[in-house]
Image 1 (cartoon, rainbow, N blue to C red):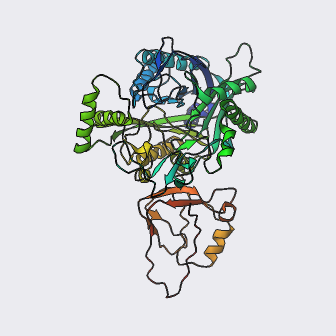
Image 2: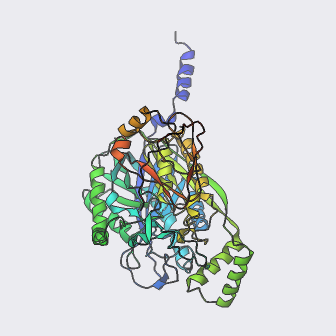
Amino acid sequence: MKSPLAPLLLAALALLIPSQAFAELQAGAVIVDVTPTQFPVLVNGSMTSRSVSTVKTKVNARAIVVADGEERLAIVVVDSCMLPRPLLDEVKKLTAQRTKIPADHILISATHAHSAPSSLACLGTDADPNYVPFLRGKLVDAIAAAEANLEPAQVGWGSENAADYTALRRWILRPDRLRNDPFGNPTVRATMHAGTNWDNAVGESGPEDPQLSLISFRAKNGRPIALLANFSMHYFGDASLSADYFGLYCNGLQEQLGKKDAKDAPPFVAIMSHGCSGDIYRRDYTKPKDQWAINDDINEYANGLIKITKQAYKNINYLEDADIEMAENRLQMNYRVPNKQLLEWSQRIVAELGDRLPKTQEEIYAREQVILHERQSTEIVTQALRIGDIAITTTPNENYALTGLKLKKQSPLKQTMVIELANGGDGYIPPPEQHLLGGYNTWAARSAGLEVLAEPRIVESDLELLEKVTNQRRKFYQQSRGPAVETILALKPAAYWRLDEFNGPRARDISGNQRDAFYEPAIAYFLEGPASKSFCKDSETNRAVHFAGNRLQARINDLSDQFTISLWLWNG
C-alpha cells in the first residue's frame, strides 16, 4: 500500500531546495552604434564648449544581459564622457517596459572618453540637444537586443597586474609653490600633472590601482559571448569623434578572441569599463621624461593592454551554476554651495555674460557657483551585483584610485570590480582629506560639487549593498605581516604604527598596547611605502602616508627617560 505522505514529503523537499540549483545561467551581448547622425555635435570633456563635424571612430553602447531563471540584469558601457542620472533613469524606465529587466537591475556607465558627443552639461559645454534623445532610444535598443541574444552560458573571472599602464597624475606641491584657485585664493597644494616638474612637487597624493580585471562569459561549447574588462586609467586622448583607447581595446580583442564566432551566433562583444581613476593618468611622473614615451601612442597603449588581457583570459576558470543578485541605493547629497560673498561675486560675472557661454576659467566657475546655489542638492545612485562568486559595485563619480581600493579590499568577495561613472555623472569626489589640498578636482562645480563627506557615504553605501547581494559581511582590511614586522613586534615596542590606513583620524597601534595615534588633517593615505617584500607577504604593497603639512600625534605617558624612535622616511 502506498503511503499518502510520500507525495507530500516530496513536495516539501522540493520547496526546501533553492530554485537557483535548477537555474541555468544565461548571457547575451550586443554592440549598438551610437554615433550621432546630426552634425555638428557638441563634445564634452573640455573647459570650454566645442563642436565637431567629423568622425574618427564610431562610438558605441556595449551591453550584456545576464539571467539565472529568476533574476535578470543588464550592464551597459557607453562611449561617453559622462551620462546624467535623469537621462539614464528614463532609459531604465523605458527598458523595463520593453523587456523583462527591472529598472533597478540595470547598470549603465560611461567610458569617460573626452572625444565623444556631449549628453551632460558641465563646465563650459552644454548637452547636445539633438544627441540626447537619439542616445536615449539607442540605449533602450541595446539592452533589448542583448536580452534577445540570451543563451546558456558560463562565467569566469580573470585578473592581471598592468602597472606600466597607469600612474598617479595628482602630485602634492612644495609648500612654497602654492597656486591660486579660480577665485583668486592660494588654496592649491595638490594638482594634476604637477609631477612633470620635480622642482615644484614633493610627491604623489595617493595610490594607484594597477589591477586589470575581467569577467568573461562564454557559451557551453566554449565560444566567447562577452568580456567585461575594468581598468583605472582616466582616458588617453584622441581626435573627436572617437571612442578613445577604450574603443581600440575592445575592437582589438574582438578581432583576436572572436575569430571563431559561429555564423549563426551573435558576435563576441568586448567591453572596457572605467575603474576609479580621477587622479590617474598614463604617464608615470616618478620616472624621467625620456621614459614617458612608452605610453604616448594610443594604438601601442591599447595593444599593450590587449596583450595583458589575453594572458589573464587564458587562465580563467568558468562556472555554469552561477546565480545572480542585484541591489541599489539612492542617496540625497548636498552640493558644496557658495557663501554669500562668493555667490555675489559669481552673480556679477554671470550677469555680464548675458547669453554667451563662459570662455575663461573665472567665468566658467562663476557660472557653476550660481548653478550649484540654485540646485542645492541632488540624488545619486549606487549599485552592487553578484554573478556567482563575482561582484561588481558602482559609483556615479570620478573617484580617486584609493576609493576603488577601499571597496575591493573590504568587499566580501575577493573577485570584485568597481565601475565608476555609472548611473549618473556627478564628477570628481575626492576623499575628505584631499579637499584640504585643493586643486582642480576639488573646485565646486557640477563636475565636482558633491558634499565633502560624499566619498565615505558612497563607500559605505556600496559596502552595504555588497553585503546584501553576497549575504556576507565585509572584510576588515589589515596588511599582512612580513619578516620585518614580526621582528619589530618581537622587540616588544611601546607602540608600533604601520601608518597603513585608508583614512584617518586614527593610526592603529599593532603592538598590542592599544596606544593608537591620531592624524592631523592634511594627510594623504595609502601610498606605496618602503621595502614591501620585508614588511608584507605575497607581493602585497607596503603602505605609508604622505604628511602634507600636518603631523601624527600620540601620547605615551609611561616611557622612561631613554627611548628610541625608529622610522622610515622619504623627504620628496
